[in-house]
Length: 357
Image (cartoon, rainbow, N blue to C red; front, side, top):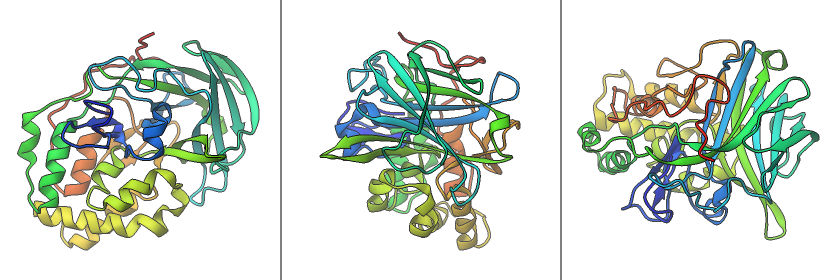
């Protein structure tokens, strides 16, 4: 989720956190607003959800982007979806990201076109075969009984974005200050985002899938990845103490995460539990355990099971999950309440999103 003025953002999943005192960033559920995200706000990813569909035998994946300033219904880009680039939902069926699929979505005004690629980690500009198209804000039924809805709606993510920025600042100084969260509440009440919701038959999926989303645009004569998202608030919690790694995370893919970023996660979690004085036994062992849970940065889900973004089992992510509390506890080694509760800005049936247009 995101923030107060577009130039004063910190993004976090489902979520965009915005903090007026933090310049040049946006905090939603999961990303760092810099570089290409700032230039192409319509491709600024916000959140990812993966859970058992209300349609029996299906898995739902929701990707959100282009978040408004909390309290405003206006999209920063002035459009619902960008017309020049691609929105991708990647689904890996193995640990090496070699088998699976990618659903790619392109837009032309109020029209959406869906594509399918037979690889979970395809080249940035690849789109594969065209499955079909239609109008945004309408239900699309595609070959294989895949169902898609895309449109603008209320932001379902709930989280204390202002508190997170202050909490991180204290932690970086070596102080554990969970009481900070009592000063604020849900930053995202009144915010809107653009959503792509897809229902996929479980028969198309393996026993376990790994999901992440990306966006890409033609930029300076070549295609470039604008953003990437999976775990909630990943850059703003697990990479908050390593700003250089935080800044470039969105332009990478998860097949390189363990090799290139795992040690940064270990170091950051160890620093956090040292500050909180959590009773986790060996701090390094605990930090390595957490790193292995969130690395690579994907949402792992067992199709057909009840999703739950919980400390003891990160299995998908449902709309009602208090995901910010989960990642704060994983990071700090003790329960932390961000003082923001589920406001139920969604419905129980596909496509779940409360539309605003």
